[in-house]
Image (cartoon, rainbow, N blue to C red; front, side, top):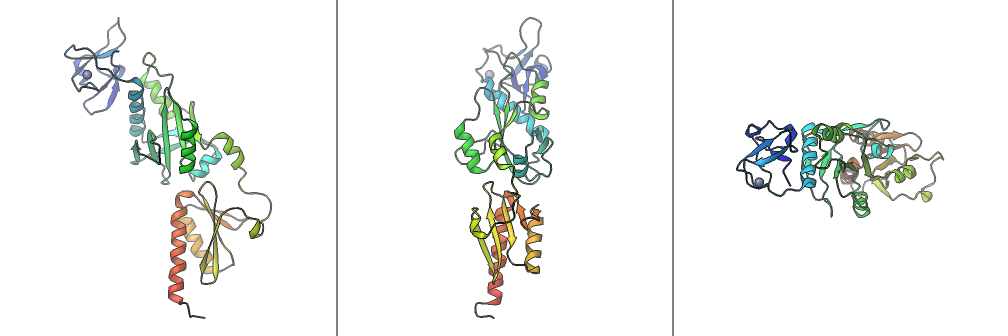
Length: 300
Ligand SMILES: [Zn+2]
């Protein structure tokens, strides 16, 4: 098999169609590092050949396509993704009606191990939320992998590049498919079914008495004044001051706002996205503890 990809002088993977013809391509073999020539004649398919004329090295189209697509996302500092209400909520985005550009910024990590899986890319949104990107060519995310994403509460976007076979590889088309296009991009978690179940988040009925609540709840005691913290299955938390107390209300409000929370007037809760949940809980506990220390156990 002839080689369609080479490494240019900046150590970036380029397709032979993007290369300058001949030795001027300044490319090296992805396998053996030997100089390459870009053969772009009329008769044979364009390909790279070793400058020494040696037989081409064996390379794997799928793994090079993976690498090529990842490089595109890194270069573009992100990619456009379709949006659904559930995904938007996980990503702490205000608007879930339009597709969104997932800003990768500097935090694009390749092949990071998360639990027992290793997503192709881990991008981090402007709000600091991690999103896994999976490049699919011959194999797609299976149920085990999807279950792991769910367990990790890690939204995962799969990009189907199966049509870009060696014989059908137009670098411009690949770039469009990876960065701009919404077609063949699919959230493998959370899935469409979960979205239907989870979307009607705020129930219409008035708040139920405490015993009727099924969400796990932590009561943080601020010297006799309470803050309730409930965790949703998404990892988001709802924080509520149980009895009205202006100081406590203002403390919770400032913590919530610092973590891009939204106020739910029906339940009088601040709903804090999962990425800020732990930090808010820790800070509330610390405040509660320092209050107890300053007042002391024997105080009135
Ligand atoms: Zn080689």
